[in-house]
Structures are given as structure tokens and as C-alpha cells.
Image 1 (cartoon, helix red, strand yellow):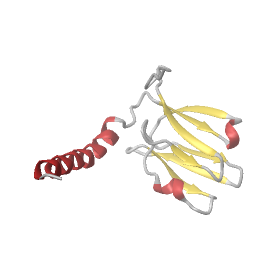
Image 2 (cartoon, rainbow, N blue to C red; image 1 turned 45 degrees about the horizontal axis):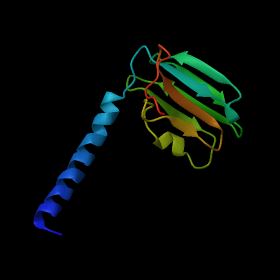
Image 3 (cartoon, helix red, strand yellow; image 1 turned 90 degrees about the vertical axis):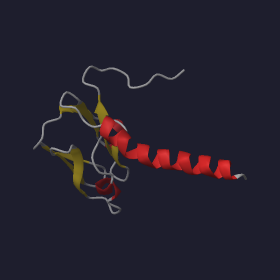
Image 4 (cartoon, helix red, strand yellow; image 1 turned 180 degrees about the horizontal axis):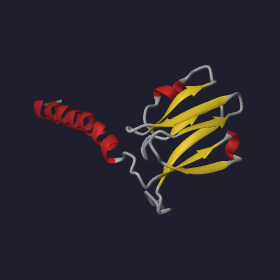
Length: 121
């Protein structure tokens, strides 16, 4: 491996690390976005407008999951599951859905216009 190869690897790694926080900024919530909440196994779906101060309790398969909207965005504030990983996920965004797998509860950010964020063939 030459010195130029090593410099290229370091440059690419640095660009990758710097660009990760920017994706969270660019994929943040907009006031017109809608949050789709699904209960265990996708049987129910509820779409709510994003309003700061709103708190929603969703009954999961082993207990309740509580989501709260703040000025930063929507996050899980309590869950009845043992791992509590959904609390550590942070703020809901298009790039960062919230899923409480043991409870079967998920929250996704949906475009208020119903548009696609990507198309695959």
C-alpha cells in the first residue's frame, strides 16, 4: 500500500464520518410530515400530524410504548420491553424510524403528500 492509498483511505473515512450528522439534519422532521404508528404485527395503523407537546400511548404485545413530540422531534419516552433500545434510538426522522421489536410497535415518518422518498427497480 502506497502513501497515496493511505491518504485516500483517510480522506474517505473522514468524509464519511463528517457526512453522517448531516444526514440527520437534512432528514429532520417538517411540520407537515405525518407519523405512521403501527401496533403489534401491523394489524392497526394510525397516522397523526406532528405537533410538539403531543403524547401518544400505543399498546404493544407486552405492554405500552409512549411516544412524545418535542421541539426536537418525536421520541420514545417509556416502553415496557426489557431492553429499552427504542429509548436509545433518539429522534424520529425519515432516515431513523423507531421500532420496539419486543412490543411489535413501530413509528415511521411519512410524507404528508403521500410521495415516495425513493424508487427501486
